[in-house]
Length: 511
Ligand code: BG6
Image 1 (spheres, helix red, strand yellow):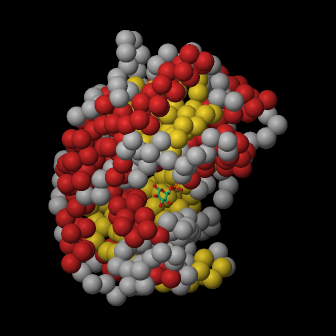
Image 2 (cartoon, rainbow, N blue to C red):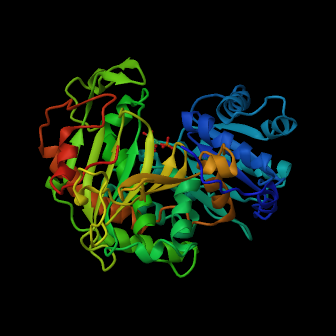
C-alpha cells in the first residue's frame, strides 16, 4: 500500500535526540534472571538504552536466581543482546556494558542469601559509584512477588538510606483474579510505597500504544468525532499466529483472558476511551484510565466467546492443536481465544459497543484498534450501478499497533467517470516509512521510565483491581461451562461463537 508521502527530515529526527533525561546512577537487580525474559528482552532493552546514551555512566546490572550461573551469566546475556537485540558483537560499547553485568545466587526464601545480596550490592555501589539507588525487577512467577519484596524489606533493602531511591518493577500477571490481585496489592503495599511500585505491562512501552493519546489529544481533527455521535463501534484485536511456545504449564493456568485480554488489551482500551487528562502526568492519566474501567458495565457471559485451537496450518506449516502441545492436558478446557463485548456506561460512549479479542494461532499476527464511524445521515451515492445506497461501507480508522505499525483511514471516493459511484480508498501512514524501523521492544521505554521514577506508563494497584473486577465473574462463569474444544482450527480467525457475538449486532470482525 502506498504511503501518503508524509516525511520527517533527518534534521527533525536528530533534533529530537539528546533531549531525553538520563537516570541517576543505579543498579538494576533482576530477580529470576535465569529466565527467558532477562536474556531475550530485558538485557537487549538495557543495551539499546546504552547505545543511545540513555543509561547513567555509573551503572550495573545484577542478575539474581537460584542456580549457580556466576561463570556463564554475563556471556549468556551478551549472546542475548547480540542475537535478540540485533547488535554487532564487536561494538565497542558492548564489551564495556557486559563488564557491568554481574550475578548473585540465592534461594528466594533464604535469609542468609538476602543478607549476602545486600552486602554484594553495597560492594558494587563502592565499585561502580551507584549510590545505593536500586531498581529491582521481579521477573519471577507471581507466587514469589510478595515473598521476595517482604524479605528484601526485612533485610533493609526496600528503602534508601538517606537521599536516593529504591523502586520495583513487577512483571505480569499481577494476580490471577480479583481476590489474588487485592491480596498481592496489600502484601506489597505493606512494604513499599505505591510510588515505588511499577507494575509493568509491556504494551504500554510500545510506541504505537503511546501514540493513541497523542493521536487523540495532540491533534484537533479526530477528537471532536471521538464519541457516540460519530462512532458506531470499536474493535480491539490482539491476534497472534504463534502458539504457546513451550509454555504449557503457564498457559494451562492462564488462558487468553488472563494472559493478554485483562492486561494488554484493557490498557489499550483505556487509552482509546479515556477522557482528556489535565496533563500527561502519571497521576492525571491514571485517574482517567481508572474512570474508563469503572464505567464498564458488568459483562454477561452471553457477551463473551471462547475458543481453543485444534490442528491446522499457519504460514503454510502444519501445526499441532493446543491439546497436543507439550505439558498440556489432552482434555484441557483452557481458552486460547477470548472475545467479549464491553459497554462503557458514560456520557461519551453510551451505546457504542467495544468488541475485544485476544488469541493464539490465528491466521496472522496483528494487534490493532479499529474505529468504525457511523454512516452519513443521507445515502446519495452507490458503490456501483446495481448496488443499494445503503451498501456503502462506513469510514474506518485503524490504529495498527503491530506489525507494520501505522494508522490508516478508509473512506469513499468517486470512481472517475460519468457515474457518481464510490470506491473505498485508504490513506495510510506507516511508522517505518516516516521514522525508519525501530528496534524498541517496549521494555526500553519502561525500564528508562522506572529508572527516572515516571509511572505514567505503568499500571497502578487500583487499575489492576478494576480490570480484575470486570474479568473475574467471566472467568467464574466460564469455569462452570464444559466446552466442545477444540472449536477453531489453527490458522483460522477463531471460533464461530466469536463471529456470532458480532453477527447478533449486525457487525463483523475486521480480519
Ligand atoms: C505476553 C504474553 O504478555 O505478551 C504472551 O504472556 C504474548 O503470551 C505476548 O505472546 C505478546 O506480546 P507482543 O509484544 O509479542 O505482542
